[in-house]
Length: 123
Image (cartoon, rainbow, N blue to C red):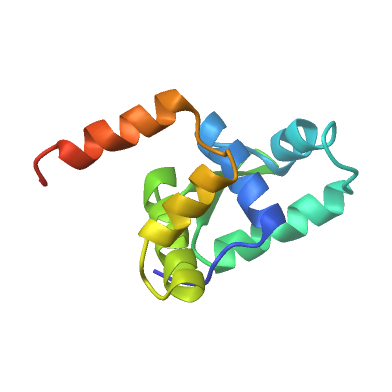
């Protein structure tokens, strides 16, 4: 599989496809058009790029292409987070967590969940 990263728009498209399980360009366009102005042709082009990057696969139903993800969301998110931590924090995750806490980005509930998970035995 291709390890190229995702742009902001590509990730938005992938989130829609992950949520739906399978989607046409029209499905994605309808889901995104209320949050940002995009041309239908832009969505079409981006979905073709995601297919070339091997994040989506497509098949034809009647006259419409249907797309589905080739990788689970969790796998892609993990890769993106690992890449970010490596590039920005030289592979150390603690500074990222500290920054999130300092910025107030984590709720008390989220902090308790992090502590709970950290205490669990590794798989």
